[in-house]
Structures are given as structure tokens and as C-alpha cells.
Length: 638
Image (cartoon, rainbow, N blue to C red; front, side, top):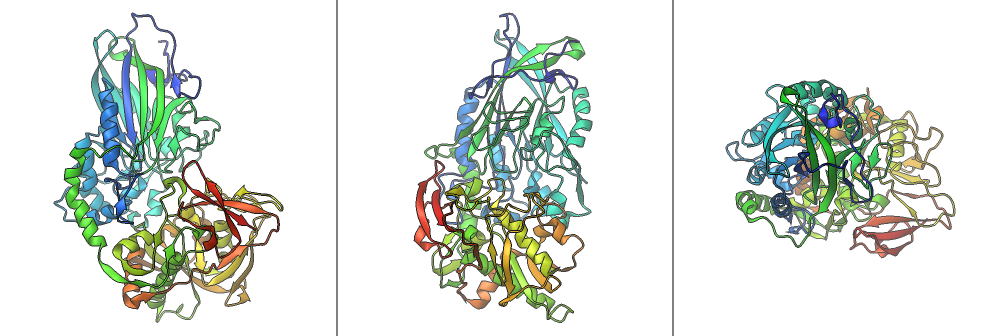
């Protein structure tokens, strides 16, 4: 049988291409007699418990985030379509203080994210890696009240979620005749999930996304799927697959039998101007490997919309559907859009409980705790985290063979702008500290750990972090300081050392930890207590369990290194205990490092619109205007 598109089955060809920046494929010409069906797919992803338009870390309304505001846009776009699906792509249970409070709530209470998604009538959702952060019991309890299927095809877990689901709809064609349509929806999450949440080792396993899909697609077609939508909690990566790839959305889209891809995990907006085109990636048309695809940002900031034109073909059991046209867009949620009233009521109890919890006072700070210049090494809040980690590890190692070793402490900024926008910074003025401030300083539920490293390991740790920066050749002016593919949470500051970073040299590592330039080294003048570090010298490094993962930027440095301590305590709880014990804290914001001088060179750092260049301590700095996204550009004179 002649199959007109990949939608016809696992043996089909490529989708028709559509021109221009409208992210549209009009498909072939049809006669008036050819039945044509329209299906709209709405998608959210990486909501991260930003359910109401309220920033719990500042105690103020949020203009950018909140699913309740997105819900109003969902209602509008649903009303425009005769047939519509609403799907979520994972990471909906963790990410804001409301998620932390909900994880500790009585098991009988419905999880606020599930309550919100039930109200909105989601048709299906995939799990993301952060949905496991509170353990399997918490995950199962949260999902038990969902009135929609939750999917994870490449997850192996006892009593786990479904691999895929079949959504059956009656859709009218342009003549008003009804057609019974079966839409297969399959979910995937990063195979590294087990490595990132090591407490889950032995309880779950995650298989390769592409291999799982290859095995599942024929079974879905045999079960009756006429089109297949992949909910891939995975970033937009290479077209060619590689084993256990984290960013598999493009390679997944290339598989015969996949018709639509909803991507996520990296918080990007696709289609959109900030995703670079590449093999199989068309950020103007909104396609991956020629298939319609969206990635709808973070925290309800955007709504993904894919309008499909479907043409039936064949008869009887061989009856199928072709995707003969599509239109793709990622729509920004207008800050003036009101919250959907139906969503607010089931969330009020959790909202009030979260605000009460965060109001508890724990101490005072004598200095401002700000992440506005954290990527210049200037962050008293990050230093406070490092001090708390060192304090806890020192107590834990007392009486052990390692008690006399020097303890270094590493931490990375979680709120440093990036894809989360210009409001995603921490700025706590001097004065009283509450639990809200602790959550702002340490946003993720990581657990504290300590490993044994050598001086050479420590130097390589800093070298990997320094790969965050772009190269600034001698004499170059206004070079963008940051590599846009390198998230700030991979930039560890190690308290207890002094060093310099030479930006005239290329980055030694890529963000996945592979060598980019084996001959290059940016870290110079590395000292401990005023003396150069000996490569063989032993050090204890206080860090977190996320850094102990067997994949990612730092994994080669932790492989086979002795783990001296792996606590069940959250780093956030250690920080809270440290502040309570000290009562008054005064961490220094003086940078532990600076860039090697390059007279005549300058670089541009995007930071909070409230940041002032006069506050930069490490280098002369000037204001260089605002970006279209609302970041303030600071010109650093090297």
C-alpha cells in the first residue's frame, strides 16, 4: 500500500516540508472530496511546581511563571479547535517551595500539581527526571490521584507508570462526517535519571530512549495507533543517535513511526530564535527531523501548539492517517493574562501552607546575599552554602582516618538567569533570614556528600567549571562571556582556594564532560593557603550527591574516587541548621578567583536588570544596555 507519510505506519517516508518562518507545512493540494481532519495538540513541560503566579522565593507575584495563568491561554486555544489534546512533558512535581511542602504533606492529601492537572483535564503526561526527587513512595502517592495516564516507556520500575496510552477520539472532517481516530502517546525520560538520583539505584532502571522507541513503535501500531506523539523529557540534540543519549529529541523524531515530538528538560523555547539550527533542527519551521515539534519553556512561561491536518487512507484494519500539514508555534503567556479561576481554589490550601512554612525565622545576615555576579565569583550566598557544607562534613568525619585532611567545599549557583529569565536571581538584603531565603539560596533537594580527591583532581574540577566561559581572544571587544549551552548549575565555586581563569585560551571541556581541547588549560595560579597546590596532595571535597553521578561534566573525576560521606540530609537542611547554630552570618563576597588580565579586551555578562556595574569587585565594569529578553548587560574590562 502506498503510504503518504510517516504517519501511515512504521515504514512511512518523511513529512511534507513547509516554507517560511510561520512554522507551517501546508501539505499537498487536496480535492474537496478528500476527507481532512484537524487536531490541535497543546503541550506544557517543565512546570516545576510553578502552579500559581507567585514567586515564593521573593514573596512577590510572578509576571513570568505560573500554570494558572497558562491555563487561561489553554482554555482560549482549546475553544478554537474542534478536536484538541492537552499533554504535559514532565518535571511537574518538583521545583518550587510548594513542591517541598507537598512532599511532606499527609499521604491522604492530593498533590497540588495533580489537583491542578486534573482540573485542566490533561489527556496524558510523561514523567521527568525531577519527578523522582522525593523518592518512589512520594511519586506513587502523588500519581495515584491522577485522572490521566502517566507515561514512561524506558523506565523499569515495579508498579510503575504505563509505557504508552491510546487516546481514541471522534473527529469530524470538513464535511461534518465523524472519523474514529486512535492517537498513541508514548513517554520517555533521560536514562541518566538513576545516576542523578542515586537513592533510586536498584529500585528503578532507565533504558536508552532510541532503542526503547524502536521496540515500542511496532507494538503501538499493532495496538491501533494511527499517529504517534512522543512526550520526550529530553533536550534537542544530535540527529544521529548515540548510546544512552540525554538529549535525544531530534534522533527520536527521525525514527519511522514517530509523527510529533514534545521535547523538554532543557527549558528552551522551540520553535524560537534562541535554538540554533543544525542537522535535523529547524527552529523556524518548528521541526525536528522534518516532524512537527515543540519545547514550551519553563514554569508555564509558554504553551506549545501543534495544529495537525490528518488525511485518512486505506480501509478496514489497514485504515490509517497521514499528517499532510501542520502548523507549529510556542506561544508566550502574556503577563496580563489572569489566572484561570477554576485552578486557584484547589491550590489555595497548599499555597497558604507554603507561605506559612517559608516565614519561619532562623537567623540574620550582616551582608547582602546576591547571585547577580555569581559568574564573576562574587556571591556571598554561595560562600555561605560552602561554609555550611564544610561545617557538616567536618563533624561527620570527626574520629575517622580523614579527620585531619583539609576540607574544600564546592557549590554552584542555581539562580543565575539563563533560560529561566532575568528575574531568576537571588538578592537577599542584610537582615533577618527565613526559610524562604534558604530555599532561594539552595533551590534543589540535593543531598550532601564528601569525596577524596587529589590536588590534580581539584585543578581539573575547576577546569571543567571554567569551560562555562566563551573564549575571549586578546584585544577582542564585547565578546559574549558565557557559552549558551553551558548551564550555570555546572559552574562550581570551590571555597578554600584561590585561582585565575585565562579566557584567551579555549575551553578544555564540553558540557557533557568530553575533551574539547586537550592542550588547553585555563586555570592558573591555583593555591591553597597561599601556596601552590601539589598534584598529589589529598583533599576532602564537600559536594552533593548529584555531583557523584556516573554521567555528565564531573563524572570522570568522581569515578572510583572514595566517597567518604553520603548523607541522607538535604543540603538545604544543612544550610538551615548552620545558620540557626551561628545565628548571625557574615560570609565574604570577595571573589576567590578572577580573570587573567587582558588589556584592551572586554566581555559582556547578562545579569539581573537590577544589577549595578559599580558593585563588581573583581574587574572594572560598565553598563552596556539591556537585551531583548530583559537582562542587563555588564561590560567586564579584562
